[in-house]
Image 1 (cartoon, rainbow, N blue to C red):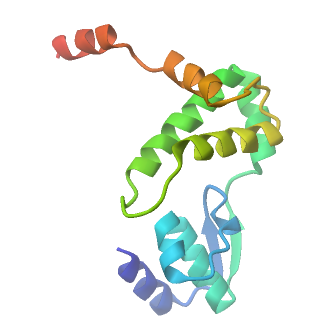
Image 2: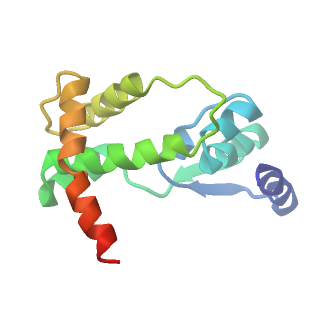
Length: 147
């Protein structure tokens, strides 16, 4: 897939790239590291290598957090992002070092630094929030038995 992306990039010869999810901030200096992160980071890597302008289509995280907290409880916002991030990390290649506790703590701190009003002190606090939004075994049995 990344080879096809690189070929399409070379063939198209863009002078401007729009990316999502903060990928414009992906500043990986080698191909393998960019690929290891995601497609948007890889395109950002190619754009930087060729001197192509990069813009992110999403508002800054501070604005996203502000908007989400106006509609949802901060714990819910954190749980949604962390559960999504856990899935994303599970989909990546296994042959790399990954410290899930550190990643969740760093991810949570990033959201706190950008205005998310959660009271998190440690990994147990994070896991309690995540678990409060995941179905229990009994709920799963009921879901699957009704299908």
